[in-house]
Amino acid sequence: MHKTTSANEIYLSERVKIKRKAFHKFDTNISEVYRLLGETDSVNRSKIYVISPNEMTSNAVASYQPIENILNINSVLFNTDSLKELQKDFARNLLLQFAILFSFKNNRNSYEQVCKK
Image (cartoon, helix red, strand yellow):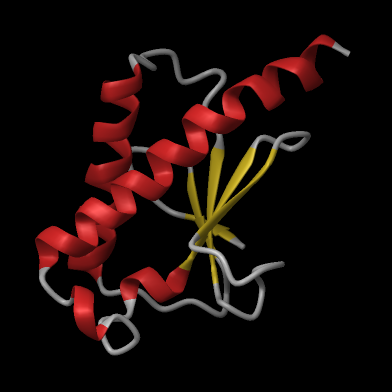
């Protein structure tokens, strides 16, 4: 895993290759999700790992690890060959924003409960 120079705390797996334009859109979407959630403080934000499909523990678009506060994103979202029906930028970006927003909103309580222990 290596940390990127993005606006958010995003790490890329060594097995993942993403084009700069696609990564910039992803980073912009992450910032938009934080804005929608009202998350202005970067202290409690999740680390975001973009990992290969083989590294995902399930066949999911995203998964959350509440103890480590890590959101895993499947790199298949960046591969238009794998997403033939979602090749238009709007559909792919909307799907990605939804996956990230859904993961953050539904797992915030898990993270807060882990922190209380």
